[in-house]
Image: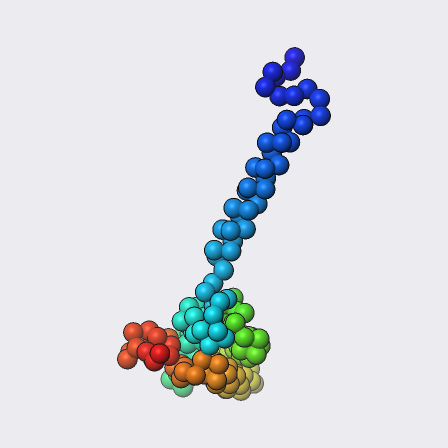
Length: 185
């Protein structure tokens, strides 16, 4: 026995209803995804970069900078291996999170930051593995941390050349209410 509401052969009546519904669903989905596109995808290059930095991009740069300094501080204070491993793990976590904030709206900045974050991740791994006193790994980590910090500075200069604004290296600049550009406009 067949359902009187459905056609018996070919399903033509059903396809006349399903096809427009499918088109409508696809159209609504593309509009919804288009609405998810960040504001860093519109405007001038300076506006796109500023928007990206004010979002997750600037926080990632600041967090990695702070984590690099925290590792140096823990090592200079001769903290316990467990405490050193903890700050090294935090550096790795912050660098990996920052990689997830890429790409930036500019390919050069994306490449500079990706390289900085990868070097920071390597430094964190060497630091973690050397925390119990392996001087060779700790020395290699120190060199890598200096390199990562230098790469972040280079990326900051590129960002400044795009935006025309000075980028701070703090996660929450006290004078700017968290604005990585120090409140300048």
